[in-house]
Length: 337
Image (tube, rainbow, N blue to C red):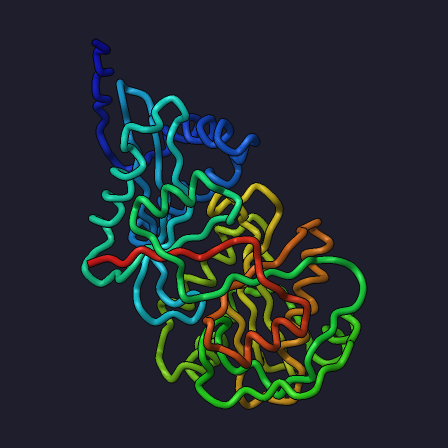
């Protein structure tokens, strides 16, 4: 008669800076490449803003067996309800099958707090191991669509839009009229129609003003955290503002700190785009997107990704017409009690 293998015993604790080497080693075994810089930034971000980041380690026999990294969502992608974004989960290959991933996920859910409604994440439809884990863990397909756009030289077919008067991925506070399609040169849009610049910390007040006009709510804390992340967390600063007659009329918050959700290829993520409704018909949204793609191409970023509500038809139509399409990644959500 076969003797059953002894059960693995492990303990859970907060992830610490001393775990960096072990995390990088496990991640390299899982994805086939080393992403040390990514994990350095995520651990550093957690030290700067511990209230926003939830990171746990599973330890077995004094060595790291697994880890999970997540952060709180407070308004990204137009959402209003608090949630968690699962960024990375990894278990050492020789420790798989012992329930470590489920225990890490349970620790994350327990620490989420009473206000968090869900854990959100994403994965490639080809990542069959991760899809099976999500299924077993109680995740379901989310209601939002993940879109992406190739970053390449040439011309961008953009809309002669009246305004992008809402954060990306949210329903607009007012009507959005994208108008008739027109093809425009990247640099002409950015240079001739708006003064597009890299986001600076001094722009915070203008971003708060625009967000208030769009959402009808005061979200200074959320916008301030976005600016902090753009200044400190992202691998490269790519967030932008657009000025018309010297006044900040719009902004695009994007990041190139790829590594979330197991990404190994160079990808940028567009979190939020907003345009002051007073600057309709000034091509602010098109200029922001055009300049963003130009900058990403110079950085050899291959793809720009974003998330859109499935019923936000105006924004979906606009993004499809400027070159976005369905991503090979799927969004998942796990409700929390």
